[in-house]
Image 1 (cartoon, rainbow, N blue to C red):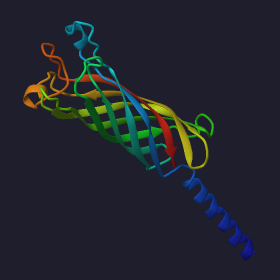
Image 2: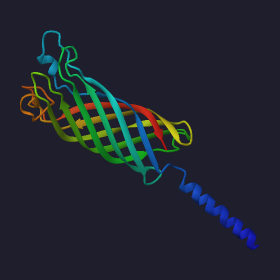
Image 3: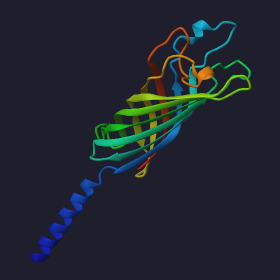
Image 4: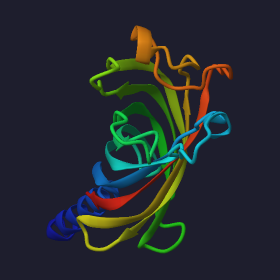
Length: 210
């Protein structure tokens, strides 16, 4: 009888351990990303066949710690690069770095054991800079940023998933003029059309390690 009780207790403990481990405690994502930047109607001010670039390729990495099967916290960092005026020889390159943090909700086992949709609300900052040229100085600015979005993961193995897609609305709050090119105070925006924020969009895809 005592052996039966020991065996039953061992089975119960193993079951509790299995339930407690039916979701990953930590996840690391890395992959390709593209940013659609809010150009604030800059194209309408430029003549002569010059194109204002809206799409900037780059990367995204994110670390996530899961407090429960559904709720976690995430730190997300991304970088995007490109020349704002795509067909102007010698125009300086721009760089954008976003660093945001916040809660994430994962819907595990709601759509089978392979698909995991998720949603997050992230808050932090965005740093933009423009390189110097022989005729213009460099400039940079850091502003408040927040990202609202989500995505879908497809489980490949016990330790790896493919992030089929992550879509984010990325809000940034830059000053609304090009003062950095002359006074090193601001980068984003269009002279004559000042705004106090930008509505950007970001897409990411890559691999998740559990």
